[in-house]
Structures are given as C-alpha cells and as structure tokens.
Image (cartoon, each protein chain N blue to C red):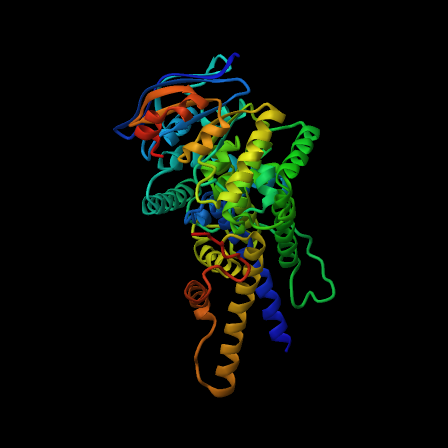
Amino acid sequence: MEQFLQQFASGLASGAIYACVALALVMIFVSTDHINFAQGEMAMFSTFVCWQLMQWGIGFWGALIIAAVLSFIVGMLVERIVLRPLHSAPVLSIVVVFIGLLAIFHSLAGAIWTHTIKEVPSPFPKVTFFGSGYIGPHQIGMIIVTFALLVALFAFFRFTPLGLAMRAAAQNPTSARLAGVRVDWMLALGWGLAAAVGAVAGAMVAPVVYLEPNMMAGILLYGFAAALVGGISSPGGAVAGGFIVGVLENMVAFFGNLLERTTGFYLIGNGEKLTVALLIVIVMLTVKPSGLFGHVTVKRV
Amino acid sequence: MAALLEVKGLKAYYGQTQALHDVSFTIAAGGITTLLGANGAGKTTTLRAICAMIRTDGEVLFDGRPIRGFATENIVRLGVAHVPEGRGTFTTLSVDENLKIAAYTRSDRAAVKRDLDKVFEYFPRLKERLSQQAGTLSGGEQQMLAIARALMLSPRLMLLDEPSFGLAPLIVQEIFRIMRRINEEAGVSMLLVEQNAALALNLAEEAYVLETGRVVMSGKAKDVKNDEGIRRSYLGY
C-alpha cells in the first residue's frame, strides 16, 4: 500500500512536468494549428540559459524569469523569421522545418554547453512535512507551479481581448483580419508564449532529471500523450492529461511489478514506461482523437 | 454629395490571371451602391480588392486618402467593414465572442456598449443565442451575426458580399430591411454585391454592372431597374 501511494504521488509529480510540456504544445496548436516537434528542444535550450544565468550568480527565480522572457522573444523570432515565409506551405514542409529546428537547438546546446550532465538545484525549500515520505517538496512545488501557469493562461485566453484575438486569429485568420486583428503578430505571440511555458517546464524538470541536451527527448513524448489525452485544443485538458499520463505510467509499472512478484510472470515493468506513452498516443488517436476534454468542432456543410 | 470611396482603374489578379480590368466607380457618403453581374463577373473580387485581400493595381481612395497597398487590418481600422462571402463566422467561438472580437480595435468602451445594444435591437435573435457556439447558428442567423460583427467595428462603409445567399426569402427580406435601417439610422454607406438584382436595385441608389471584370454600365438604380434592355442582357430577369 505504501509503495502504491508513493508511486501514485511520484506519478502526479512527473505528470506536472508532462502537463507543462503539453501546455506549451497546446499553446502553439491553438494559435497556429501546428504541433511543434521542436518544443522539447526549445525548452531544453531555455533551461540551459536559465542554468547559465544561475552560474553567473542570479537566483533560481530571477534566472527563470529572465530565461522565460528571452525564450518568449526567441519564440516570436522563430515564428517571424523561420515560419513566416511558410504561411501557405503544405503541412509536411512545416513538419520538416520543425524537425530542423529540433536538430538546430539540440546541437547548439551541445556545442555551447557540452553534453556532460549538469545539476540544477531545486528552488523549493527542503522541508519535511506530513506525507513527505510519499512526495518531496520539489514535486509539490512542480505541481503548484503547473497549476499557477494553467490558471494564468486560462485567464489570459478567456478574459483578455488579446487572448480572444489570438483564438480568433487561429480559428479564422481571414475573418480575424477583417475584424482588424493583426494576425501575423498573434501567431508570433503564440510561439512566444509556448516558448516561455517551455522554459518553465524545463526549469521544473531539470532538478529531477539533470540538465543535458537529451533531457526533454522522452518527456516531449509524454507531453504529446498528455496533450492528446486532454484534447490538443484545450489547455485545461492538457494539464489533466499530463497528470493522467504521469499516474498511468507509474501504475502500469507498479502493477506489472506486482504481477511478477506474485506470479513470477513478467508482463510489463519499469522498462516499458515509454511504451505506455506511445500506446496512449495510438489508442487516443484511434478511439477518441478529440481527447477527453477537447471539443469536437461542429461544422455546418 | 462627397465621395466616400473612389475606385479608379482598379486591376486585380489571382496569381497570373487578371480578374479586374480598370474598374472605376464612386460611392457617395451615406449612400448605397450595388455591384451587379453574373457569376464570375468580378463582384466579389472587387470587394476583396478594396480590402487588399488579393494583389491589386490602380487607385483606391477612402475619404480622399489613398489606401491601396495598406494591409487588410489597417484598412479595416479606417472604418471599412467587409461582410465576406460565406459570412466568415468564427465557428468555434461563442456568439458573444464573435461580437467582442469585432470590437477588438476599439478602446471607447461606452461606445462599444452602445453599439452592442443597437446590434441587439436590430437582431434580437442574436441576444438570445449569446453563449451558443456560432458554428451551430442557422444560415440566416450567421448572416445576421456577420452584419452585426461589421457594425461592431463602427464602420463608415460596409462591403456586403451576397447577404441573401442561401437564405429563405422571408429571412432575406428581414435582413434587407435591417440593412436599410442601418444605412438610414447610423449613416453607414454600403457597397452591396448581389446575384439577386431585383432585391439589390430596390435598396440601392446607384448601380454598376460588371461583366468579365469590367464595368459595362452604370446609373441610378431606378433607371437600371426600369431599363428592360439592361435587365435582359446583363441581369437575366
């Protein structure tokens, strides 16, 4: 039972990270209708920037804020410079560009900061409290940060004119222009926001997995799974999806181990966690492509 | 009356194909002008050309000021509201959000509130459906929403692209009645593109007839309406 709770809690903690990554993916999807495959590498790069700032003596939160702002700017520049000429290009060309971006950010990070792993300290105080046996302070901190991010983004999209303009620009660019919305800037803004959310996700995950250029490779996959479970167009769904995927992968491993201990029959274990994420992607796409919380768009024909 | 919109020698292109050849016309401030013609005559293209939604050449003056070469969103911000072909509904947003986004560029909240009240007076049905997803509205309601969105821009000129398209005659009548009210009460000038020539000529004061991208005739709407020759050769009724 104790082990079960531990696994559950650590599932929630990793779920928080998947949720952040999924949020960043959703951000670009709702504003541009694309899935950015370079999201993970951009987040990793932002985390290196954050780490570098900390090496120069800036505190964790200060460094994170600066890194997030820089990421926001770089995200916007990527959209304006790299993707702008491709606005009317077929979707496959854009996918190829995303993969190119992935490779560029990956090797750039390796070239600047080398591939040796770096330790990033947790920004949260190491306190013991009731239940600390199950979940650490950093894990709880991650969950809180994820929720704060979600609430902020939700409020932005739901209640601010700029958020509404971004949604309108994504949904019907022509009509948005006819309402006076500067659509090109809305797309760039979506990229900037996604990059900033990615920076937060990276800084949260780095103390857990250590910082190196491959840091986000597996996590991005979980992020995809989370976004799909939640519904790729729904920020709230992405966060719920993150927690669901995080807990699910740990539960599958836990019950797999339990099965092996009791019957001696090995079906599934810790080694197959990533497979779980892939299975989730496949099952969601075949059974319910709109996700658990995404809405099916009604179209009049 | 002074001209609000003056189009001189307007050419428009889809890729390599030239769709408009030296189209010229003027719209009087406060007036309603209609563009008539068969399918493919260049009516929609003319509206799109005014709003810089396609590649153009020539001269477009709005309130005496050249606007050709401006970005679409900047032309809109000057007070040109385009109610596009197909209505341009933001289908996944609510009716309320559709109306709000149209007022996105305006900062005077009190004036926006006044315009919203006026929109609800014109289209009480939209008020009932405020929280409904706009894509689920009927065709007529979506056309009302499209005109309402244009009104929320507080425009000086409305470009209306076939507001009667695909709608039942009763609804068309209602929409045209409201368009007349908008023109009379708010003083909004209109450029109306219609397939339904009889309907358009009843509403408009001036008429231009397009054929294969050229203006082939123009005049007072009532003269065009009464000229059997024009009716037979260009308007098909």
